[in-house]
Each structure stands twice: as C-alpha cells, then as structure tokens.
Amino acid sequence: MSGSRFPWEEAMSLGLGTLRMPPEIFWRMTLPELAAAARAMRPDVRKAMGREEFDGLMIRYPDGAAR
Image 1 (spheres, rainbow, N blue to C red):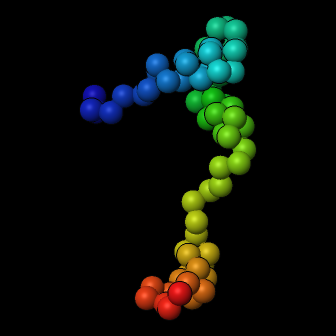
Image 2 (tube, rainbow, N blue to C red):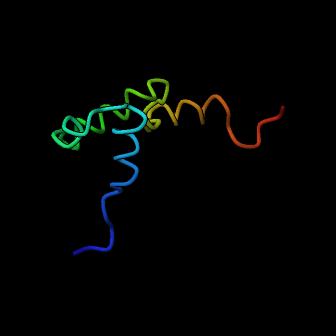
C-alpha cells in the first residue's frame, strides 16, 4: 500500500456537511461524481493557465519592463 491515502474526512465533510447529501446518496456516488459536485461548489475557479495563455502574458508583460 502506498503512503498516500484518500482524504475521506474531507470528502465526507463536503458530501454530508456542505452539500447536505443523505448518507445513502453519498456512499453510492463514484469519486468522479463527488469531484464534479465539489467543482460545482466553486464555479468561479478557473482551470490552470495553459502554455499559450502564459506565453501571451509574457509578451504583454515582460520581466524588467519599465512601469
């Protein structure tokens, strides 16, 4: 068994506490379903910036530019 364990305490806190799911619904969910429910709680969180977007920012705001 590896050293990393699934964070059940946090998952149960989200599902049973924050989302107020009945236990029978929570325990029947798959992990992708729980992840989708967690993302729905934070719809304003964007995905990580891609390389193309990062390169565009570097062109617009180069290091050492005069302010």
